[in-house]
Image (cartoon, rainbow, N blue to C red):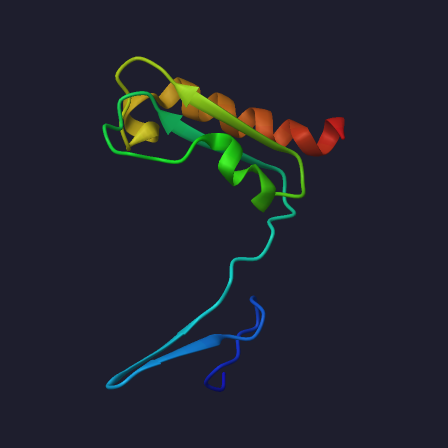
Length: 95
C-alpha cells in the first residue's frame, strides 16, 4: 500500500506538524446490520447513542445493558451479550 492510500477508506488526509506528519481517514458509513452495546456503569463521559446513529446506513440498534455493567460486556453480562448477537443475526433474515 502506498503512503496516503487505503483500500477500505477514502484517500487519507495529511496533517503536517513539523516533525510529525500524520495521515488519517474519515470514518466510512457502516452498511452492515449493527447493534452497539453500552454498560450502564461505564463511569466515563460518552456521547448519546443518537449521536452515532448517522454513522450507520444499515439496520441499527443501541442497547444499554443494566446491572452495574462497565466495559467488558461479554464477561459482565454474558446473557445480554449473547442475546444481542442472536438478535443482530436475525436482522438479515427479517429484513
